[in-house]
Image (cartoon, rainbow, N blue to C red):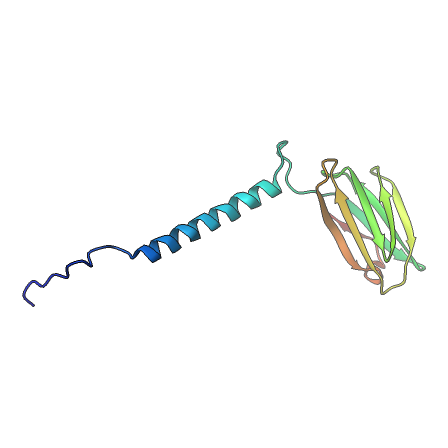
Length: 131
């Protein structure tokens, strides 16, 4: 080859690719910042957690709050029944059949919440602890 040059094509990328790259960087940055803002609070507390003990015996499910973690209260739901536990050491007992779902939600005083236990009541036949 005798030193051919391609005039007018010495740009590194086309304007369309540059715009697409800038949009991709902006979306990624927004996702990272959004996730960070939604999972942290000004006090530096991250996720909501607590420890419970759940036992299913004789057609009843009993949930006891054993360690506070970052939660201010727990909500326990079995079917349409919902009860609140407001102090560590307290417990609630609800009637339940083995195929019903139990859901335990830990809530902070600032309104943040997280599901800390979920499953069929029949799976809690022995004492189980959850964070």
